[in-house]
Length: 407
Image 1: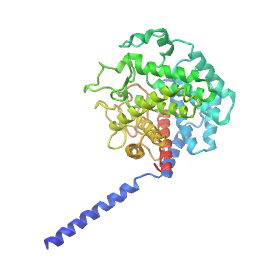
Image 2 (image 1 turned 180 degrees about the vertical axis):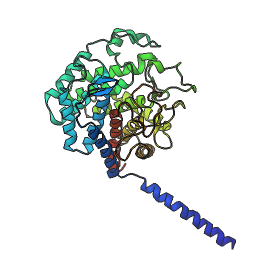
Image 3 (image 1 turned 120 degrees about the horizontal axis):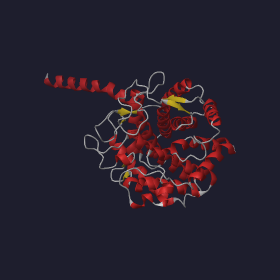
Image 4 (image 1 turned 180 degrees about the horizontal axis):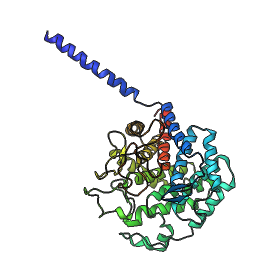
């Protein structure tokens, strides 16, 4: 009798686990499901902003060429690559033509935020041609490459060469967000024109931010970045941990992807080999660090290693998914190690962030550290919705490619 009871108990236990196993298997997304979700999020945004030329009003009026909207268009172009609907291209071109394919505030701007829109201009130039799409950005970069930054450096420690003439010439990116906003533009311009001076200058600006500003904004030992000079040690979060802002690290991670991608296609690859090796090294170091920070639900906290403002957040998650998926797709990251993190990230965003109508929850609004826009929630509308959609589309589109590849 004991034996029969034990066998029955064993059978019941096995049966109890069968539905869980089936559920776990069915939870693996299909590429069609991912694309459908991306389309839903994008359709929500395009319906809300039917006219892409309309300015944004958050406390003040801002033209739709501002960085938040430019990041959305980065995501839209990623969606267009996997889902080439004419209406996407028309939406981009209507927006860009309205702004005369020119950086925000004109060709003399040296503000990286103003240059972000040029990534989309140059991408469309490669797709359909037209010098009007190329010339203003080229003029802008030529101007910046000759223009020192005379603004006072942040009041924090830095190496002695930070304020030299070279430091002034390359010392424009004093916050790490700028690396994503502008660095890919320099790489794109070299890839288009074959002129190595653009990549060279962009890399020197990156290295200045990485190694010189505030003694180094990149903590090579931990593989993560401080957002700007205000957050390097001795600054600490209230729990004594370092302040590594999720989206700030996401910006750098995305920039590395976009520049490495450009360098993969350059005829000048051999000439820029040392730069490629540096960016690849940083990308792999960040990938390791970020994977170790991922939450059990697949998302990342607003603050990567601190309990201060711990909580799920979409934009950093989308950018990390973008980078890890791209790394696997391009052979820089082993699928065996990183694929599960990508799956968790997508499923986490899909489950916890995407509303039935395509609105995205858990998006941290604009700011520069974990405290910005708090508290976050599933239903809270951030001050700007556009860049959150862009981060989501970037991550999802690259993850779609990963699913299609079967890696």
